[in-house]
Length: 250
Image 1 (cartoon, rainbow, N blue to C red):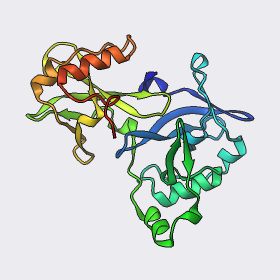
Image 2: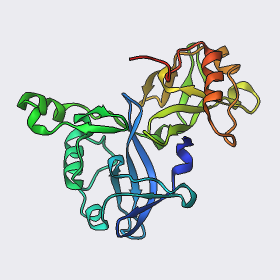
Image 3: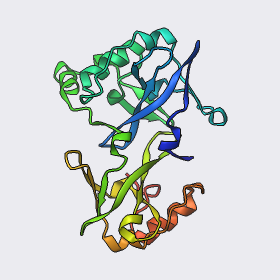
C-alpha cells in the first residue's frame, strides 16, 4: 500500500519492552530510493537524543494505532552508538550500528527468496571487497531535509517538493509530491515518479526532473485525501508515456 511519508512522522516506536518515542525523520538511499532508517526522537524517555533505527528491525506496523513495533529492546536502543546528524552518516557508522543491533549489513544482502532477502556473511567477501564496502559513500539522505526543495523541469522551476509517497511493504519511495500552485497560479499537486529525477543538488536545494514544464502543468492532479492505487499509477505513466516500473523486466 502507498502512504504519505510526511503522515508517518510522529508515529510511536514500540520496543519489545515498552515505548521509546516518536518518528522524527526517515533516511533513504539516493541510489535506489529505499528507506533504510527511521530517526527516533527519544524524548521524554531520553531528553535531547535522537537515534537511528534500521528498517531491518521493523516488525509489522500497526496502522490503526500509528505504531511501529521494532524487534529491539529499550536497552539496545539506549546504548546504540551516538550519531552526529549535522554530518552525513558514514558506512563505518552504519556497520557499528548494525553490529550493535545484531542486524545484517543491507549492502551484503541479495534477493534470493521472494520477500525475504538473503544475508551474505562477511567470510564470503575478500578483504579487498570488504574494505571497498566500508569505504563507499552510503548515499543516505534525510527525507525531511528535501521537503521544500525547488523542483526544476527541463526549462526551469515548476514548484516545490512537499512529500514522498512510499510503499509500506518494501519501503521504496515511488513518488515525490510537487506543489505547482505558485508557478501555475492555481492550487494543484502532482506526483513525479522517482525514476524521472535526474539530479538532487543539495547546495542549491533543487531537484531536477526529466519532464517538460508543460508535462508537469497538465499532469493528472494528485489529491492527498484519495489513495494512490494501480489505476491512478496507470493514468500517470500513460500520460507521460513512460515504461511502467511494475512491467519492466530486469
